Length: 388
Ligand code: NZQ
Ligand code: ZN
Image 1 (tube, rainbow, N blue to C red):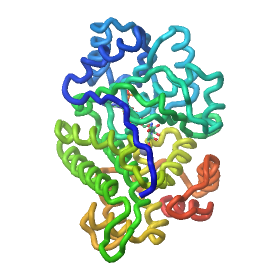
Image 2 (image 1 turned 120 degrees about the horizontal axis):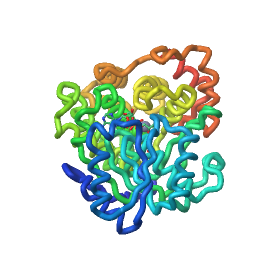
Image 3 (image 1 turned 60 degrees about the vertical axis):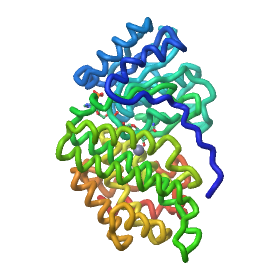
Image 4 (image 1 turned 135 degrees about the vertical axis):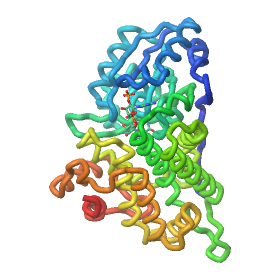
């Protein structure tokens, strides 16, 4: 098992009426907050009303910043930073899905930066940020428990992240009831996203002893498998009954644990190629939802690299899907995504062969790819070509 540091400092308040407490937590650190919102779903599901009531009761002043779009843009972050500075807020509270929460974190960090995008390009961790709080209305990204914000520079077509320990939310409130009316299409993409966070880490697991089949990272691999099975079961239940509270709750909690560092312990940073490719994809085509992009890319990546790490791919097939071969495990993954209604080809969004060279360059612009085994630009082009 590789050495690691694990820290998940977010206080999670989970369950019905959890949001009532958010104001009381914020007021311990700040008397005013920037309330970052999406495009209106929080008004319909009750999260906005519950949040503002809690702020009011705790005596926290707030300034509202609405309109964060899926795959939030640098332009929106800069506008939010300006408002936060003008209002001299002492904290930032995001109420929404991953896009709103990422925007809240980016604004909180940007509050102290001269040039937000310059800092993103520098790849240096952020050391100072306003405290961040979240109320989750869509679970999947895990953003509510980690220190990353993924932002799109639409001009440069780059979807890159900024991160730092200080950007990890202090307190996150999750009331699964706010998610019961989320459309199935959005739920499916989010659940698939959470699964891929685990799998990005999992496939770096190694066999230590071929005779006993015991793995180096047995503990983390078991956690990963347990979370994957929980997510798969929740997804199947929700597809039949989207209002199933228990399934929503399990999906929400498993999503948190999938990307708060836990599933990567001892796995030397995971692989994360599929995420780099998806960010290249939705960086160029910002209308593509992150989870749906991954549903298309991830199985193709599995196909490309499975021969380099057959032991772990075999174990995945057997433990997660009850399948006998690597290929059956990949096919079962693809079939589940498709049963849940996710697209399976990039042509679904009008992406064609002529876009591939740009996508490949864009993906490599941030870093080299392939930690299970190094990937060349030709390998990555093959991953995209297979799913056109
Ligand atoms: O804007 P509103 O009106 O809120 O509507 C949203 C949006 O249209 C809607 N929605 C949210 N909660 C709802 C709801 N609709 C009905 N009922 C509810 N309760 O859902 C739509 C999608 O929301 P969005 O926040 O974009 O989705 P998601 O949570 O999948 O977030 C995607 C973003 O997170 C980034 C992605 O790249 C993408 O930009 N990620 C962030 C990560 C992180 N910070 O750790 C890791 C991930 O891998 C990912 O990259
Ligand atoms: Zn993701």
